[in-house]
Figure (cartoon, rainbow, N blue to C red):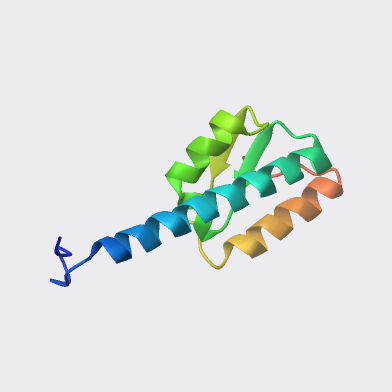
Length: 99
């Protein structure tokens, strides 16, 4: 297999590594989701970092996790941590947070 844009051969080894990283990421996100639910009791999960755009992991969280819904910030990136912290502080102060 050759990477279409880079023109670099991708071997089974690289594909296996990528698949393994995906599985570990899914497990970590699922554990984090379960922990967040246990701590907050919220029924909606909101992700705000780059990993939030991992649609395969998000699907597992919806299927196997404790949440009724999941929202991933569409512009997730390094600023997501700041947005998440601000939302958390507003929520703790009893203020409405952005939907």
